[in-house]
Length: 164
Image 1 (tube, rainbow, N blue to C red):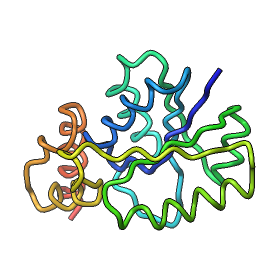
Image 2 (tube, rainbow, N blue to C red; image 1 turned 180 degrees about the horizontal axis):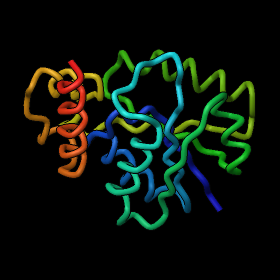
Image 3 (cartoon, rainbow, N blue to C red; image 1 turned 90 degrees about the horizontal axis):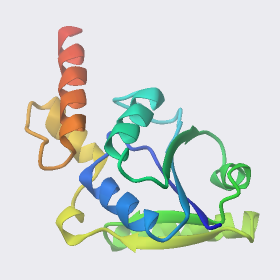
Image 4 (cartoon, helix red, strand yellow; image 1 turned 30 degrees about the horizontal axis):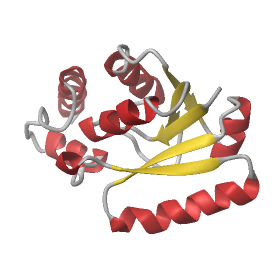
């Protein structure tokens, strides 16, 4: 059984992320979409909120399971018996960092390989940080994220604005 992991912060999940999830799910028997719990970042959404959003927007992809993890990706891969890590590349600037990470992971566990998928052209510019910035400035994000996520972003921004 081929088991893959698509890790990321997914804060929030974008249409670009979904593109990679849908395409990579066709390459493996089981795909874990793993939300990284990274204390170094200040996320808009909690890990649980991100997991819930991903569950909702991937519910129609039968071989996808949403999970959260912290620590080293290769350790998580061992726990899940995964041998494939999926990474999306938007531009050449992503490649240098991702190559370094994939080589490090391979040295730490020679049974884990990384597959790079280039993002579909219509999402090549898109990142979660941009979506958050647009949303926090009152802009419309419907072209960047699924409708369910649009509603969650509106709720979160409304709560943040109420707290000011």
